[in-house]
Length: 233
Image (cartoon, rainbow, N blue to C red; front, side, top):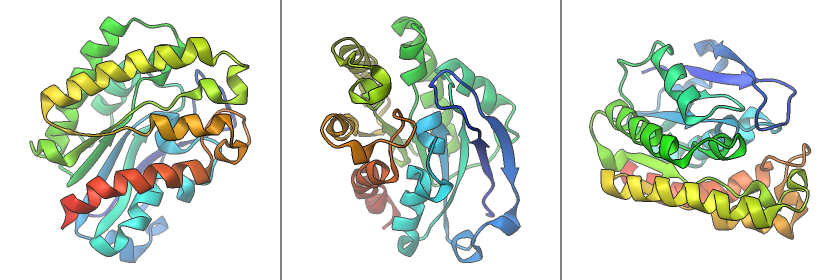
């Protein structure tokens, strides 16, 4: 299957701001990666598209590069800066790929639900819906769906020292997605402890003072690839 990348590009750095979507044609994709046997769909928000870093430095592309030898394709990405769980659900319904199946599906969503002050009850409901959608994309293979925890942006310069408020709220949203992931029987990778390292290492934060740097994403990929690599064997 040829890969299609639905990704977003813009100048805004705030979590609540949106990027415009664009479809990357097949001739812009490395043909050797396109020939790889394992297809990959990444669902999320700014953390999935890699706001403020080059496309190749986003975690889905770094993951694909790290596991290219194991046959992982370039990712198909449905993500946008500022998207909540509700926004992602709406975008998937109009993506034109709802009938497609993928070998690997990652899901990282929820930071904008927290940032916008949306209810945790709504997040739980919509996260479960997204989990079921991800499992369907994975052709019912629950173990090939990988949920990634929400990073703690409270330690970044953008948060302006409000980690004592933001951190516990992020933990509450992560408790929800971890509980529901366990119930559903999907894989779960907790990158939140890694994200907290940005409190003492500014090189882990992108130039916008908020989003992860390429270095931070590479640390995430170190953990995610342990799970995905086993699935590709």
